[in-house]
Length: 151
Image 1 (cartoon, rainbow, N blue to C red):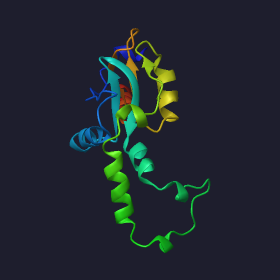
Image 2: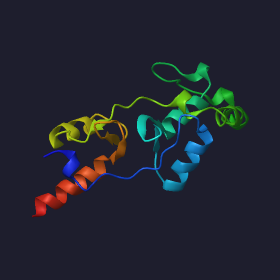
Image 3: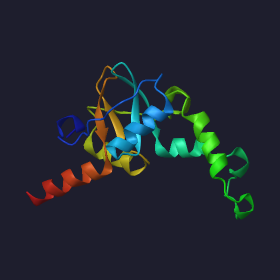
C-alpha cells in the first residue's frame, strides 16, 4: 500500500519563497499549525516551522552545543527579542526555510511510517512532478491505522 491511496493527507496553506517570515507566521497562527510549506507555484521547495523562527530570534551568543546553564544575567530580554523579531519579520521565507525531503506519493506505507518516526515535522507529499499534494502527519497516519485495526 502506498500513501497515494490513503485519505489522510492534510491540505496545506502555503507561502512563496518571496513571502515574509511574518506572513508565514500569521498562517501558522491562523491554522494552529507549527509549520507551513514553501512552494514556488505548485512545486514544493521546503518548510518553515515555528522552531525555525524561534531559533532566528535567539542571539548567537546564547547558542552553545550543550545549552547555557543560566541566562539570569541577561535580565529581561524582551527588548532584545523584540528587536530581533522586527528584523526577522521582513526576511523572506526562502532565507529561513529548511529543506525537508518530501515523500513521493507512491511511497510505501511502511517507509512513510519510518520516515515520520524520525521527523520533527509532518512530511510533505509530492507527485512525480514535485507538486505538493498535502502533508502527512504522525497523528493522521496513526488515526488511519487505528481505524484500519478496528475493521
